Image (cartoon, rainbow over all chains, first blue to last red; front, top):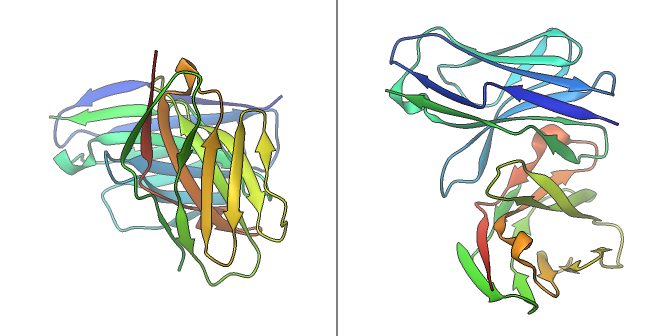
Length: 111
Length: 115
């Protein structure tokens, strides 16, 4: 069966520090991978998606970047965090049907 | 562009009763999917139910069923025999067929099931 792992679950970082959130998928090949940010009262906002290794599409301009160094690994990064980067980040994968499978999420607090 | 509107930010229901969560949407796509996702307090979001727009029959999954009104662009979720474990945020979402990257979510409805 397919599983998705996302870490760290909780992160507290000072403004200006770097960020790395990781996500790996097991049990499937060549999945579509996604990073979402969830803000209270605002639903889920798609940040990045990837249809293959090295292929990243960005949905909104921001202080974040994403990379896909391996087929089932998706990384969300920042060189210098802003206060506005605080939030709950969700990794997800999908197949053609459109259904998304989500990770457990990462709570980022920037101080 | 696709939009999803959930007009009920919060709802509550007594255990064992039935509750309906509302969702309306707009899309210019002819083929699309509609979803209801559940996010319990533990935070991992899971799919509750899915409806293909070309299917007239409403989808059902155990105690969960939808009322899909294509002409009215409405996709409500009915939860029967509510259980305490149904307490969660519920998100309605839409995507074009074969277009997961274009999945659009509503802002969610927080459902509380009271004992």
